[in-house]
Image (cartoon, rainbow, N blue to C red; front, top):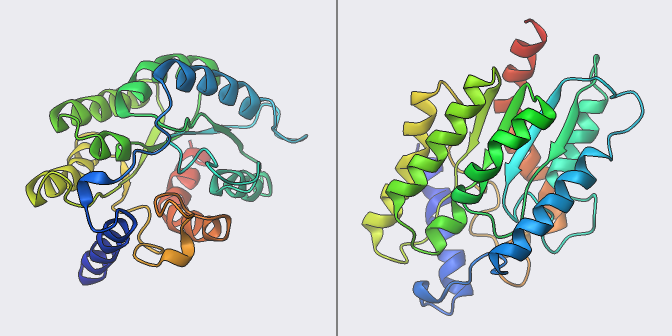
Length: 245
């Protein structure tokens, strides 16, 4: 737990430095208009679904529903942690398919609006949810954030898929109470839906500016393997459980 708190402290310091010491001035990840984000999301889903390599046709699917951290914001196409996951899972026997439905600028409300169609279209065995950071950076009502994550997790479980939540943290833009309340959302949702949880997705790189792009928000290409290494220990048991079904 002490390591977890230290990662959080360093992450807050990084973001405060990037904002010139003023937490409220932190930029939102990819603040494009909602309609542009939605259009990009549709294109992203189509592209992701069509890039499965030979040998994965009919393979069970892992769906990643995230924001810019998972959508390769500022990175070369194919260099993000989700593509690294796809490469690793294609080497499994039997192989798995990965669909990256992440959208830069996405909020939990956006993810909630898309989850039903994504589940129907891709029929995933596992859904990895990396959402909430944009909600907090915009100071949105955390009751709505939790309700949205609840709805995403419930829809996923009702569809027969397992859930992996990737927790995020923010500096105390609107006070430490807000930041703490945000952090507490993820374990509550995970408990309610028997989901696997990574408490803080950016823990291995938090506080070290070498791992972040100039905006000090988005991880660099070099950081992507570290993010995958955070996800893998939580995801691997879900893969094994699904294979045993």
